[in-house]
Image 1 (cartoon, rainbow, N blue to C red):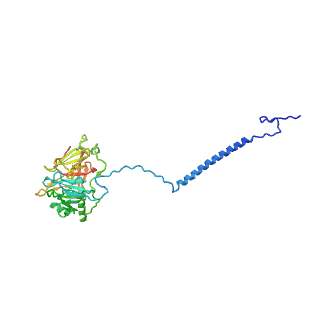
Image 2 (cartoon, rainbow, N blue to C red):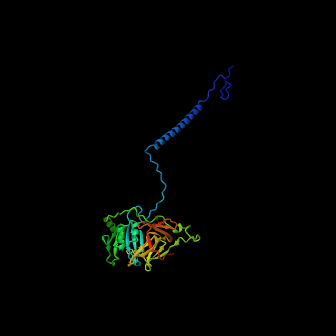
Length: 385
């Protein structure tokens, strides 16, 4: 008797003689997934490898654009405006007639440094020093006095004048001063015939330079720097806020003086004064109570720094000509930006540079701007308020 058993994959006990076969679709699907995963991994590795190789050759080739490092922004360096610090142009000193009133000077606003000193009769003369400016008219020009040479020499300036005293003539020769004198060479000068002589002589920087060149004077120098200027604003009140120069420590503000108005006398007839313009931070100049103005522009003359230097003077002849003790030591004041402080001055020889120091021995620093040095008699009455 034969029995036929139907195949049941869940139950293979019915026919032990027939072999069981697994389905092929599932097996093929698993193999395909493995191949795809392998291909994906290989593709990723290939991309990574190719990218790495490309970047290596790119970074090490000379054709790629270099990486530019941007430097940090440098702090702005301030330069002086009163003259060109990089120029070795030799200064030019010009003797200025100061017996002409307060409205007859030309060119004094363009000089970066000025000296006013007593002469005979209780009058004064000014020596104006120019550098790095082409001033077309300067004057009126007047004769030399021998002690002005001391300050022309310390600036290594070409000394320009029209006439001289016998003392100046002797010293110019003895000290070998490079000078231009209108008495012996009128070429650099001209006279304004509308003005009464001898107060009508004028000159210019270009004419002085031409004459100096013809005389074979050097037109450059490395020894022109004199005073110590600072492009940063100097505030004397802040600088000496906690000063230690008082004889009495309780007088904390006695060293720095408020200086809105300044007055000093050369003689009974000659008084110089300054008034502080706080808006423009400079001093307006006055002569005998009247505003000192430029003849051409009509503008009041003004100065950033004032040095008051007390120097002993005395008469040396019956005419009243003066001599000054310009060497040695002395006292004075430094004035700028509305304040004044007492200072000392020293000068070791006639040609040596005058050194101006605070009471602690530190050299003074001047503000960037033109300067007037008032060399006054030791007996002068100075008012600072």
